[in-house]
Length: 192
Image (cartoon, rainbow, N blue to C red; front, top):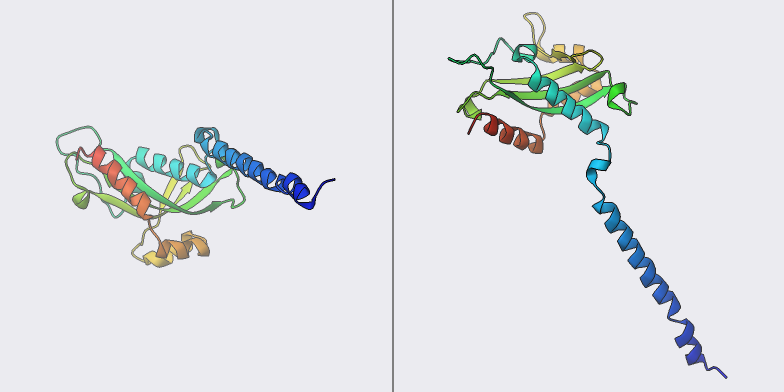
C-alpha cells in the first residue's frame, strides 16, 4: 500500500520539473531571438527616413539647403568639401505610411557642417534649421524655413509646417546621440 509521503514524493515534484523545463525552453527561445541577425530584419520606417534625409542633404549642393547666403570657402581647391549632416524627423505625410516608398513629405530639422580640411567644428560653416523634404520627386526637394523681409521666422514656420510639427520645430533640434554621431563623422571628414 502506498503512503501519503510516497505519493507526494512521486507526484509532488512533477510540477517543479515541468516549471524548470518550461523556464529552460523559454530562456533558450529568448536567446535565439536576440541572437538573430539584425540585418535580416528590415529597418524601421523612422530609421529609413533619417538615413534618406541625411544622404540627400549630404549629397546635395550646399546651396540647395543654404541659409542666409552662407557658403563654404573653398580656398585653392576645386574639390567641394563634404557636407556632414545630422537630422531629426518630426513627422511625415501620409502619417499612415508603412514603407519609405509611400512617404511623400518629411518635416524635420537639419544641422550640417561643411567639413573643410583641418577646420574644426566650432568655426565650420553650418547650415541648420527646420526643413521639408519632398520625397515624391527625384532628387528629393529640399525646402528650408527662412524668414523674409516681410515674414518673421516663426510665422514662416507656421505657414509651412502643420501645427503639431511647427511646435516641435520650435522646441527640439538634434538628439544628443545624433549630434555626437555627426561630430564624429565631421571630424573624420575634416581630417581632425
